[in-house]
Length: 87
Image (cartoon, rainbow, N blue to C red; front, side):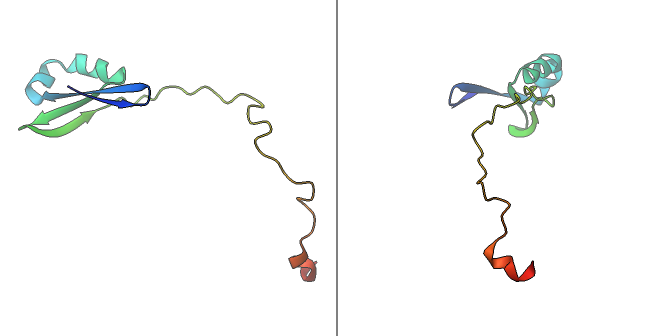
């Protein structure tokens, strides 16, 4: 089993042979759903990666959470000097 540390999150990766995976498929699926990455090997080479399809639900953005992050100048919609000939 290998572990990789990304900031505060630890991702655990298991490498399991095809024979063992076929016997413990239900357990491996449950581990993958819980965020663990499972690599199934065949002839000692990685063959399949088992990862969850269901992504963690993101919370909806809070109304007003971006307040003061974007500003628009007062003359935003004023005519541009370059386009005077076209007006």
